[in-house]
Amino acid sequence: MNEPAQASPAAPAQRYSDLALDPRLLRAVADMGYETLTPIQQQAIPVVLAGRDMMGAAQTGTGKTAAFALPILQSLLPLASTSVSPARHPVRALILAPTRELADQVYANVHAYARHTPLRSACVFGGIDMAPQTAALRQGVEVLVATPGRLLDHLEARSVTLSQVQFVVLDEADRMLDIGFLPDLQRILAYLPAQRTTLLFSATFSPEIRRLAQSYLHDPVTVEVARPNATATNVEQLLYKVAEDLKHAALLQVLRDHDLRQTIVFVNSRLGAGRLARMLQRDGLKAQAMHGDKSQAERLATLDAFKRNEVEVLVATDVAARGLDIVELPGVINYDVPFNAEDYVHRIGRTGRAGASGLAITLACERDGRGLADIEKLIKRKLEARELEVRAPRRLPRAPRESGAIESSPRHATAARHATKDPWFDKPYEADPNAQPAWEQQSPSTAARSGAGNIRSRRKVAALLGGKPAAAAK
Image 1 (tube, rainbow, N blue to C red):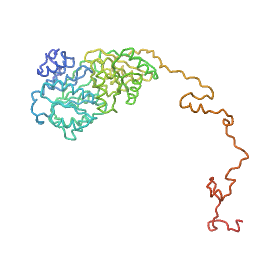
Image 2 (cartoon, rainbow, N blue to C red; image 1 turned 135 degrees about the vertical axis):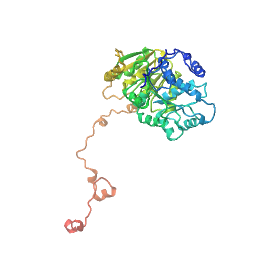
Image 3 (tube, rainbow, N blue to C red; image 1 turned 45 degrees about the vertical axis):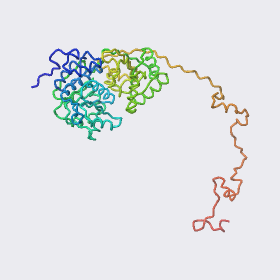
Image 4 (cartoon, rainbow, N blue to C red; image 1 turned 180 degrees about the vertical axis):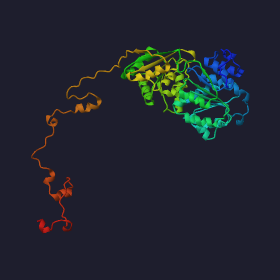
C-alpha cells in the first residue's frame, strides 16, 4: 500500500541558496535577481527532485515555471555533454504549453536557467516556418518546449524523437483541454516511454483535469498553495456597471481616472479587438490589437513593443490571457466579461505578478449578469458593483435645414450655383392628351426599316401553316 503523499517532510526552504541545486543553476538564478522562493516553489521543487509525479496548483504569476524547470535541469545535469554530436543531446524533458506566447515565455526562462550549463533547449510552435525549428532539433536538445499541434507536425516529419524523454510537463493543462488539445495530448503521450515523471501544472483544477491526471499520472503528489480557482490577494478587483453604448467612453474615463499608462484590455472576439484598437488610436492612444488572426511574427512584435512601453494599451483576446509575463503591469481591464469564468482568473493574473500589487477592472452591462454570477461562484467572492458616471461623448448639434434648401457642402456647391428658379422646369411632368405616339404616325414599312418601337409589322403566313389565302385576306 502506498503511503500518503507528502510534499516535503522537512521545513520548506526559504531561499534559493537553501536548495540542493547545482552552483551553475544558483548562479543563473542570482543573475535574474531571484532570492526568495515562492510558496509553490518551496513545495514543488523537492517533490520533482525526488522523481515523483505531481499536480501543482497555484495562482498564476507565482513562479510555476521555476518550480518545475529548476529541478528538471538539476536532474538532467549528470547527463549533460559538451559534445557537438546530436546523438549526445537527445530530448530528455518535454514541456507542453497551450499557446505560442506561453511556450515562448517558458522557453525564455528555461534558457536563462541553463545558460551556464551544457544543456540545450529549443522551442517549437505554429505560425512560423518549420525549417529553422527542424534545424535546431536535429542539432540536439535536452529540453524541448512545444505546443501540441506543432510538435505533432515534427513527429510526423521525423525531425524529433521522444523515446528518451524522462520528464514531461503539462503547463496550463486546463487551457489545453478548453481549446480541444486532448486528442493531440493523447497522441503525444503515446510516443513517450512508460517510465517517466509527469508533472501537471495549472492555475485551476477542474474535474476534467483530475480525470486526465488519473489516466496519465502515477500516484501523484498534489501541491496546492492556495485555494483552487482563487484570485491573487494583491490584485484589487473593481466592477463598474455601465450602459452598452457608453462602454467606449467608460474605458477612456477609467484609463484617465486610474492613470493606467500601460494596461491590457481584454475582449471576447478577434473582430472586437481590432475595432477597439482602431477606436483608441483615433482617441490619441498608442494601442495595438493582439489576437489569433495575426501571424506569430506580428504577435511577437506587438508584445515586444508593449514590453518596451511603445504601446500603451494592448487590446487582446484570451490568447493573451496566459503566458504573458509583463514586469510590473499596473492593471488589466475586462472590456467584455469573459464567456468562461475561469478565463477571468487568468486575465487578472496578468497583473500583480511576483508579489507586486495590481488592479483589475471589469466593465459590465445588463446582459452580463449570468457571466458575473458564474465568476463569483468560481472565485467564491462577491464583486461589489460600482456606478460609474460616464459622460456621453460630445456631438456637435446638426444645424436645422430649411425646406428646399441644399446642404452647403463642397459636393453640392456646383448644384447650388446652377439651381434654377424657373417654375416651368420645377413643375411635374404632364402628358399631352392630344399627342399621338410616334409609332402610330409611321407606316409599318417605315417602322420596320427604322427599327423604331417594339411593335412588329404583320407578316404573311403560308396557308400550309394556317394562314389565309391571298384572296380571302382581301
